[in-house]
Image 1 (cartoon, rainbow, N blue to C red):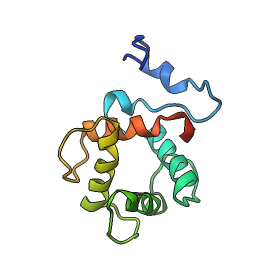
Image 2: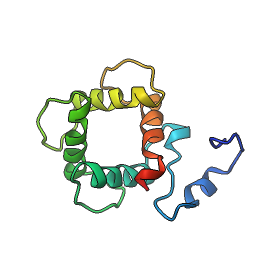
Image 3: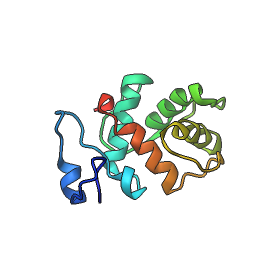
Image 4: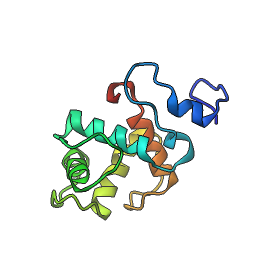
Amino acid sequence: MINPSGVRINPLTYISQNPGGGLPKTTTEYDGVPGPVFYQRMQNWLRITAGYTGPIDGVPGPNTYAALQRAMVAYGYTGPIDGVPGTNTWKAVQRLCSGWGYTGPIDGVMGPNSWRAFARFLNQDQWD
């Protein structure tokens, strides 16, 4: 794996790095596969911006997804805030991702390129 500076690093080392004192960065930005660190970062972002009050445990559930739906209103989500993400939730996420390098279709199908772009957004230091 190569970090944003172009330096080759061991992904396991990257996961454990925490230079700012906050959450570790997610490797989803590079591998396109969301995991616990990705979801911890998502939960923390949602805590800061969308009223998420659950644990930052990396295990998304209805409260995490309801907060995601609240956050996605800014990206055109008009469905219910029910904590059950569907096509319209993921379309809104892809619209957010279009500002972070996602160039695929806005079809609500989250593939590796969608996840990578979402992770680039979540890896910002402000969400640590």
